[in-house]
Length: 261
Ligand SMILES: [Zn+2]
Ligand SMILES: [Zn+2]
Image 1 (cartoon, protein in one colour):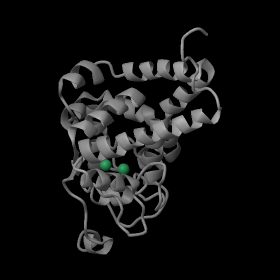
Image 2 (cartoon, protein in one colour; image 1 turned 30 degrees about the vertical axis):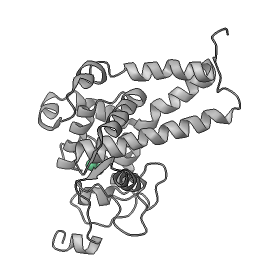
Image 3 (cartoon, helix red, strand yellow; image 1 turned 90 degrees about the horizontal axis):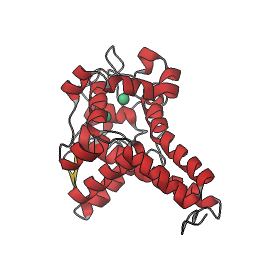
Image 4 (cartoon, protein in one colour; image 1 turned 90 degrees about the vertical axis):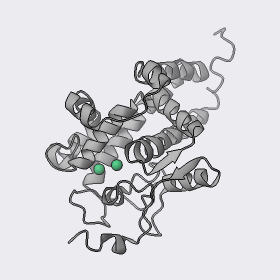
């Protein structure tokens, strides 16, 4: 191949794995910090530099449109595990959500009434003319970049892994996060904490804690729970790149007192 630099990262073989893990980590940050804790629930705001970077990254690696994601997720909170929930393992079956959660997500984004009522998101020039208008362009450009960096075979494998990365994360949270694990709060839904330490999904595993108090930018409730997304927020806050609007400070017992019987 005569293109200069083509396949430059193809060797050694483990570079592709490191690349996917680093890219995926940043995609998960875009999901939990920007789409979820900031755009949907407003528990934290970011400096425009951070916000634009995360928006760009979500566009480039997932093709998700912020307004659609926010709408589906806000409706999920409004109807969690009841009729009207866009993706409930209670309503649809756990395996359906684990294996085909994307189908339920896409079905919800086609619901104009849902979009009208719950959709909210950025409405600036780049959103209207690039991110929303050409939502698939980013992942196509990244496909070309991956093939350029790794060559066709490994490049396609890297890209495919990234393409299913976010759907897998979503399916696990929306499926298992409403069916398996432990609960700190007796919320009306079936939300659960999958495990106390989540290296991969950056705090999203504490899904019952989140449903108990959705606006809180901090998902952890016990000292022994490890919410990486929250530590990123604290770090960004410390250097003036984030502003925490609300973070639950009470202990689970204090918070739950009088709320759940
Ligand atoms: Zn949920
Ligand atoms: Zn939420």
